Image (cartoon, rainbow, N blue to C red; front, side, top):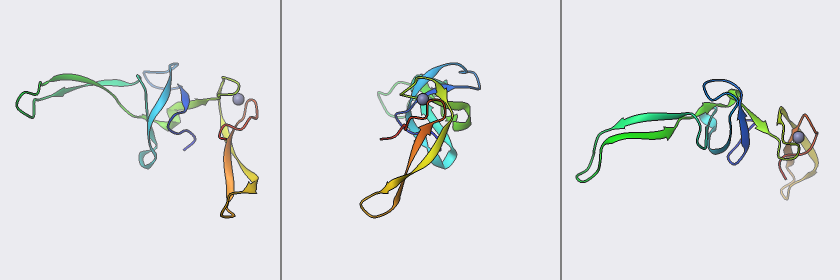
Length: 110
Ligand SMILES: [Zn+2]
């Protein structure tokens, strides 16, 4: 996935096209993300317990990751991202990858 929880993204397709939001949940198994305040759906719920109200609740539905673009925290543009392998390895000698912005070439992950 090119985006993850906490990323600021721009929706580029679907009914929320053009809107921006922050990813609150990522679902890598389904290539989907939930964005704060976007793609709300109404669900009709029945009361399940005594004293609980039934009714209509609004909930954010997941969007497919191909419908969102990462907003680069460095240049502020909705950008394509790439992966770059760092020369430095981590403590266990594994190579490390960072995402970078294809617009301004800045690394997105620290
Ligand atoms: Zn950038």
